[in-house]
Amino acid sequence: MTHEGPVLVVTNLDDPTTDLVIDALHGRDVPAVRFDSGDFPTTLSFAASITSEGTTGTLTTPTRTADLAAVRSLYYRRPSGFAFPHLDEQTARFAVTQARYGLGGVLASLPGCLYVNHPHRVGDAEFKPSGLAAAASAGFTLPPTLITSEPDAARAFIKSARRPVIYKPLSAPLYRDDEGVSCTVTVAEATADEIDDAVSGTAHLFQERVEKVCDVRVTVIGDHVFSVRIDSDLLDWRTDYTRLTYTPVQPPPGLNAALYRYLAQFGLVFGAFDFAVDTEGQWWFLECNPSGQWAWLQFETGLPMVAAMADLLERKTTT
Image (tube, rainbow, N blue to C red):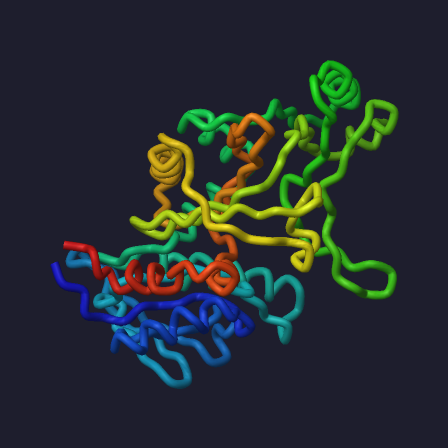
């Protein structure tokens, strides 16, 4: 089967990773149509017909028009989301809902399209409990983990743990401090004495800390697996990129098969996996981000990751 239509790229304006991928696609004469859902309806419009013959129609940006029936792949990165600031709150809420289920539903239902990744599957995979359960089913080794809103359960878990326990947010929404500076809730060690009734206010994730010698980021892009060792003295290496060193490594036997078992459970073709490696050489699964960053690793290691993503979106290996 041939796929000669455009690649749709859904992301925000400031996305250097997407810039690299689109440049690679243009170098192959593969048409790409980039847009942000936040552009709708100001500079983005669409008209889609859905019949027993399938979905047809067009999507139009200020510079491109895409034939929806001919889209070869859709790269779903980091769109800003729908917004209608000119409307009152109730009307804006209605308009956002119509846009999400209208334009969003059409983009999620393109015939013959390869999704990297499908937005619905991304949503499923972003739930940490689901990811941990899928990791266990795939055969990964996991640190003991508790997700709870009960202070007594949290204290008991910490007291019975064989290793120090850390707290991790289940998701990482953007916070702003008193001066308006953006920040996030960080991973930190937790002791039983620190647990109080505030835990009952929402869900919390507690996990035994792996006594690690390094971290490994494993990025799966279609048929390609890129494993990079990350050395630092940080509990969470993502808090300070200036203190990291990178080395490409080979994963242990059986790990690649487990990666694809995990992805298959969610219907994904891309995933950014994080592992902690202990003093015995055991790789411990921490999480998989279905929309994770990856392009900076090519600059640090020379691994051909952009070309691999372009291959996938071009559907170069699809027969």
